[in-house]
Length: 155
Image (tube, rainbow, N blue to C red; front, side):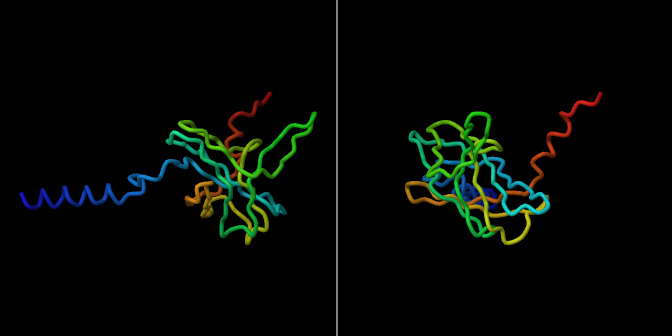
């Protein structure tokens, strides 16, 4: 019987100490990845889906990674026939919804990379929210076009 109680205590401790049990953690990053760099490229980007479980909008106001000297929040806008990337002050994570950072849309831009990001690498990323909280996650480096190959048509 004592062993059973010890197991219950251990299980409860693990649950309470897990990051998912933190009361203030209202945003969950899902499937983050950084874009592998093409030869000669000097920049990369991080893409991730955020699930905001809170009742309020939460804004990402900054991001950082030891892999880059400079990190900016970006969006892509269409100006006539031209798609333009621009720096933005915040990325709003709408209450009770998911917000996807993806190629051709919202993303975290990486400049002054310390070394090339190659497929299979991983980088640590930390985002800062407007309430002062910070949240870190690990983003594996992937070739963004790798998933497109299966959609090619051959005639």
